[in-house]
Image (cartoon, rainbow, N blue to C red):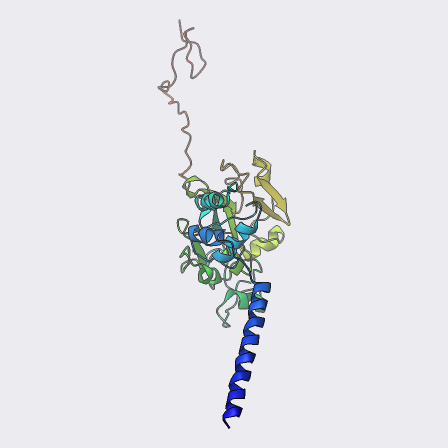
Length: 308
């Protein structure tokens, strides 16, 4: 009996020892030595794990930066240039600089401009409603108003306006991670260049129908008239699919396109009110105060000679 126990103990010991050796050899064969710089890069990242960089999280982004020969195409929108400078210093690479961006809502289809023609009673998500039908205003392009973009935002940069039924972007909170862009099934949210004082000009419509049909859907729809295209001095506006588009990188915020839009589909945000030019008024009984006598004795305002 004692021999059986002894043989069992010895057999198990030998089997355990052989298994340990095999596991050790396998571990040595397939071991992965992790670059310590990955931890250093991850430490300087904002740890938002928002996916705005194109990777699932900050750890994966750090690994991509360490493995890359250049930081071209690698950018953290939350940390911006400041964080990318730190990443570049750790890796001994040249930092990549990008213009800061901010989300904008390219739809003005509020209750005022886009009357409801039906009532939706399904699942309260934009994705489901978009898959089922065109929406309760029959516009196949407009905002569905169920707030998928708000749910997707981790930075409290979006909220739904109860008066208009549209999402509103809080510029100071927006980090341009792009989560709201991905969440919107209608593709009405765009990341545009962030200008000084958060000023922006853009066509707040993506309706590609012809003018008459587009206006039936919404009072402020772009009708593709190209008047804005004709007055833009910087070639920042392009026309396509019955729709005008303003390139935020080329736009110089001159605002010449805004007053010529017949449907008010171009929005100008955070600008001071336009200056009103004062017209010269001449009274019937005499010259205006700006009408100064000329050297030859004639009035500069009327052009008539003075009696001798």
